[in-house]
Image 1 (cartoon, one colour):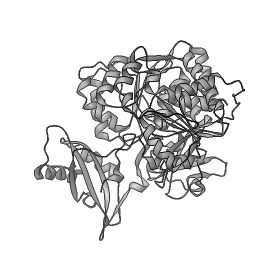
Image 2 (spheres, helix red, strand yellow):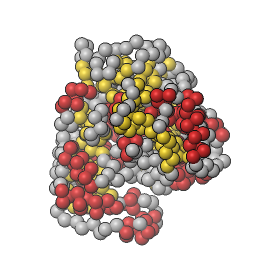
Image 3 (spheres, one colour):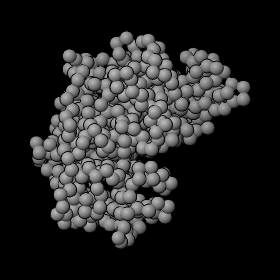
Image 4 (cartoon, helix red, strand yellow):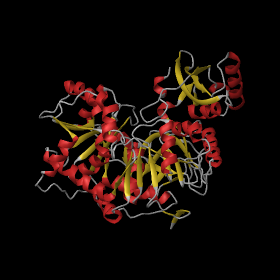
Length: 552
């Protein structure tokens, strides 16, 4: 039985842990590169050995099964060793972005009850302040130079790392190399036969209320995601290369760019920090087969002069997720791909951290404008009346609800929201209420409309910012836009638009009038922005989404 093309409805996921699954891959692939990092290739044999050493090291310093450890690292090899090393001993990696503010890190430590943490030397000063508010039993400080090849470590220390505060080691702080030495001295049996249905990773997300919460995800969820994504890709991804620019604290970065490739026997090209020049250089040098990112990344690529004339025929798949991809940006990026000899089009997907990341993807051989595609194998979607479990007919708008093997175990210590978000039906199937509005057509294609909490209600009418943003983005002068609702004593809310202009255009009353006139052609009168504000840029979240909550 098939979903479409060569994608099956059902897959077999097995009952192994994340680490055991990856070590199985390593035993087959041996000398093939699992990771590349700033010019260094790390083979699967090296990956397996490093995972084992890190597992032993964590056990030696007192980490035990069920303990959560904060992994506050960018896309560096140590983050990958920690993820699987902790899993090896039955512990849990709580993945946190190192650019988080001090208060956010303190909050996440408390939320996940972490007594151990790993970070980079450049964030050491931040953790000194963190520890004044929240004690940590053991803080491990890694360095980028620890993973560089040849003479690069010396150069990196002289040019970059010497600027960071000197790490003072004591009973509660240790350097990465000393941490690894602890592992080499481990004589106890550290390996655990882990139940793959139990907690393996914690990722942080706002959930349906916007308050940051720790999301508990199992080995089974991650392994299912990896096999589902591989099946949906339409390509044999063994021995292919994925440009891993999405951060490892994000489900998209960790689940798709890392774990999927490690399970399949591919190579993840680690990108520790994104900028358009270095990204272009990585594409030119490494010629990746797959790119996954948020819409703002693709928008940046289309304006990237460093990619002028570059042959992208190496690409087998480009996937957009994490935020809504406007129709206009998809058209621009598809045109960009064609002009650079790529024989593919960008495929939009959909997902939430509550199911690791992706759970729906545009088929390789059929797309519908505005659609986020079809569900993954073993994943079921239904559209319900908001706040209920009552399914609505095809073509009717409602809340997107989904069920499948990648759905979370729940939020840490947020039982009320667990009850509101996870509903068990009469067949004991658990349905995740996403807090997103959408529509499904009679062929099963899903259309994302808007986050429920982002919907604007003005004079009793529902207004969807993404629809107005699509119109704004289609104007020849607009590079990107964001639409929000602002309080109004008469209308309750009124619509406000922010735009960033393309190069060569200057802000003027005449241009803003022209953009507004363009909106009048396609937007109902009640949904028209009352003002269009021109900005040099729009605020972004740590993963590159437009931070609409910071606009007013």
